[in-house]
Structure formats: C-alpha cells, structure tokens
Image (cartoon, one colour):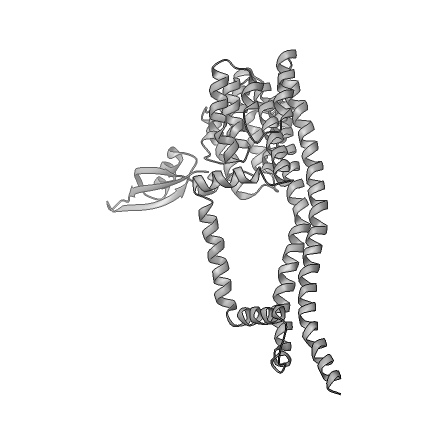
Length: 399
C-alpha cells in the first residue's frame, strides 16, 4: 500500500502535516475526514523497499505461481492477491505485489505496473510480459519466465556453492597465520633474544610478529580503509571496464567466466526472441543481463551491425568475451530457420558446460589452497626450529 505525505487542516484552521498509508487519494481523504481533518494537498512517497531488486529465486516462484493460477482460470487481480498473502513471502515483496495488484485494479497493464515498482522487477521480465499482453500468451510466458529464473538461480547457486569450500580454506589460512604470529611466535621471543645469531627468515618472522602484536588496531583500520577504497574505486566506470576486461584474460578463470556469461546471455536472448520481441530490442535487453561491462560495451557496435542488415551470428561473433561456438550455433539456426530452438539448445549446452567448468575449477582450487596452507605453516615451523637446533649444536660443540 502506498504511503502519502499530506498537508491537512483541522476544524480550528490549523495546518497539520503527516504521513499515512492509503490505497489512493480518495481513501486518504476519507481517512483524514474521519479524524476531523480536511485534506489540502498530498504527495505519494516512494517506498524504498519497493525499489529493491527481487531475488532470482523469488522471481521464479512468483512467475510459476502466477502461471499456475492463470492456468486454473483465476483472474490476474485475484492471483496477485493470493500470491501477496502467502505466509512465506517477505514483507518487502508482499508490499510490491500488493502495489502491483492495486495498479491493475485501476486499469494499469501488468507490465506497466511492474515497471512502476522501480528496480524491483528486472527489465527482461517487464519486456516479456508486455509482449505476452500484446499476444495474449501471459500464462505461457509466465511459465517460461519461471523456468528461465529457476535455471539462472540454479547456475548462480552452483557458482556460490562451489566457492564455499575454497573460501572456508582461505579464512582458515588467515586465522591460522594470525594465531601463529600473535600468540605462538611471541612465546619464543625471550629464547631467541638470548641467542647470538638467528637466521634471517626467523628474524623476519619475529619482526612481523612484533608488528602485528603492537599495531594490530592500526593494521585492522588500514585493511578496512583499503577495502573501502577498492570498493569505491571499482565504481569508477573506467576501472570497472578494465577489471572486467582483465577477468576474461585470466587463465582457466577467464574461460569459465566466458562460458557463464555466454550461457546467461543465450538463455535471455532465447526467452526474448521466442516471445516475439524484435531482435534489436532483445539484444538491448539481453546485454544488461551478461554481468560484464566490457562485453556490454561491445554490444553498441553489434546492434548497429544488426540494424544495418548483418546477420546476428556475424554481429555477435565480433564480441570478445563470448565462446566462439555460440555465434556458430546461431548461424546454423539462421540457415535452418530455427533460431529460437537453436538458442534454447545452445543455452542448455552452455549451462551444462558452466557446471562442469565450475566443478573442474573447484577441484583445482581445493588442493591448491591446502598446499598454500602447508607451505606457510611449514615455513614458519622451519624458521622456528632452525635456531633452536642451531643452539643445541653449539651447546654440544662446547662440551
């Protein structure tokens, strides 16, 4: 339900300012009248929660429930009411769905009502539903969108899940190193101080330990500031562009990212093209779902080439960051007149390859992280043991 900032006047002629929730201005007027206030002016206040992007998993559930209810003959207004009243829906999403229902009751189209929710619904879904409203295929489109976001969520979950174990190992390495340098090594300080000579590597470790113990607060603040600076730096357009370009050229990781980006774009383009959208509009919308600024920038030239009459396969073939077989697959679809089915097939194949590539990357990362941990701990142990054994040898030689 929208919120209104209003200016009203009471019976004594005093102006009152406030905020109140109401379905529309008529209801706001009636509610104020019941409180003895006369509405002078009002302004709808945008709900910040409604501008937050709905997560992929929730989008898939929304589309599937909408399609199921429409298939059962339930009206669109009632279907949205049922979805918004479900117990497991988050409050912020409930507000969005209820506002869409309110706008539809006022005669606004579903796609336009979604568009008025700020960033809540992705542009892809809005375009798909707008096309479905024109063709009368809302139910089929909702099912297709449900499948699209389910697969997108599955791929994203695969990537996040695959990175959990390497991240845990990395955190474990950091914790072990901090414990060794701040609690273990200081115990040997007095012992090493009594020795005439200690190896350079042991001296370096003890110096580093003293620095961490003495200046831990300053180091923590410094790390935080560096992280904050990097976060702000990566918001700069040119820096993001250079970073995304560099990511594609990292060995192994670059190939994996290229497969993921291509699979994501192929799935989006397949959904848009099969719904009847013009290919230029589909490209303009699909480019925003890739997730790489360097690839996104190259679409300007690709779209211009398509508008000039060039084949889609040739235009996409000039984009650096997509796997080479993707435009080749599109070319086959153009030659056989089955572009939509070839896009579907290509998306399925690329998503499978993405999963295999992620599994392969994780299988390489896990032993690598263990080796790094072993090298760090081994170096520290050797650096500590070497001077101790050296002192024993010196004592033995004295006897």
